[in-house]
Picture 1: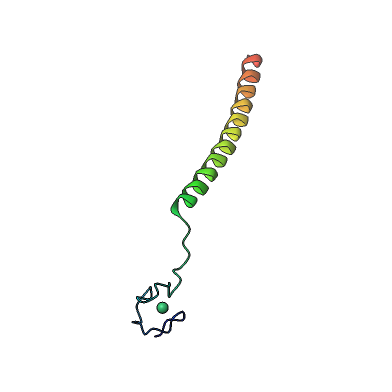
Picture 2: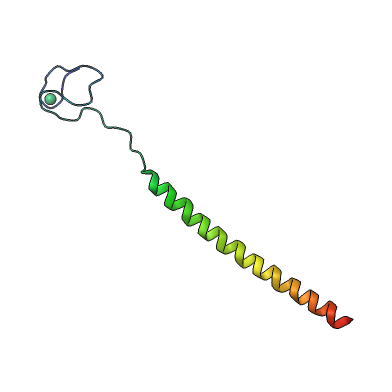
Length: 73
Ligand SMILES: [Zn+2]
């Protein structure tokens, strides 16, 4: 193939033109892994917060039941 920039002939699998140095093929856009890590961590924090709230609610219900049972004795 030929370089679009300088029309120099270059190999098909070249990524850069050896003559003018222009990039020939755009590499597939990849999200940096830290973005995924941050996203997963964020969801983990949100999930943990939700589960903790639910556990607190269940604990309060359980304590109320125990109190009512104890007061019935
Ligand atoms: Zn070129």
